[in-house]
Image 1 (spheres, rainbow, N blue to C red):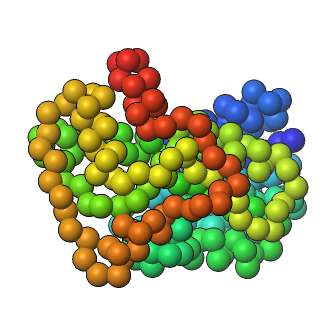
Image 2: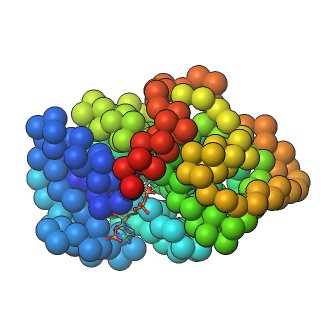
Amino acid sequence: MRIAIVGGTGTLGRRVAEELRTRGHEVRILSRHSPDHPVDLTTGAGLDTALAGCDTVVDASNSRGSAKEAERTLVAGTRNLLAAEQRAAVGHHVCVSIVGCDRVPVGYYRVKTAQERAVTEGPTPWTVVRAAQFHELLGEVFTLLGRLRVLPVPSVRLQSIACAEAARAVADAAERPPRLGRMEVVGPEPADARELARTWRAVTGRRALQLPVPLPGGVGRALRAGALTTDRPDVRGTVPFAVWLAGETAGR
Ligand SMILES: NC(=O)c1ccc[n+]([C@@H]2O[C@H](COP(=O)([O-])OP(=O)(O)OC[C@H]3O[C@@H](n4cnc5c(N)ncnc54)[C@H](OP(=O)(O)O)[C@@H]3O)[C@@H](O)[C@H]2O)c1
């Protein structure tokens, strides 16, 4: 198959691209800085040329800015992408989303829910793959905060997964026919973010004072109770955070 990966240079996208290439597919990497297929979701620039002849599109783009910027890339961008897919007769749109995003209606999660809606109401047959937080994201956040020698961590129940395992599930979805439904992909074990921060300190040996941060209101209650987790995932990864982190730390 010829598969376009929007955001194919990102944390998830580049692993999905590697996985699909290994499986013998022709993969096109689309992003603003892609040397071969430069596109901008917010304007639609480059999409018609980049999607010509593609069977499937995986949208692994992201925006790490404000919710407003995320809305421009992920919601308006999805509409631009779907319109281009229709012109190119693309048969399957795979949207990468987040487990429980619709149970936490604030900021970025609200944008992800709106992105899903654009896909499920859009013209291209679709699959939504909801992943839990990546171990890579937690590692990045703890490392950044740890530089300040303090780790302010709220109580949030997570089910984080190694990005490579999530990428395999996204690649599987791209190879199958459109599901017209969601699938959920999580790590092997749920854990509180505070427990994961303690694991990070123990495995990396970094000294940082861990501070509890209160998360007030209904959103805080929902996050503590596991709004970003699921008991019945379609795919459960096998690599716990501590094992993934030990591998990363040894590789440095
Ligand atoms: N990170 C997590 O823990 C996590 C967990 C679950 C689900 N997800 C979902 O997985 C997806 C990918 O996340 P990620 O963390 O892998 O993202 P990421 O590392 O931030 O990568 C974002 C990608 O999007 C591209 N991009 C950004 N703006 C663009 C634009 N206007 N037009 C075209 N391409 C654009 C970037 O390339 P250029 O800069 O070259 O444009 C890059 O390739 C997102 O949907 C996210 O919600 C992430």
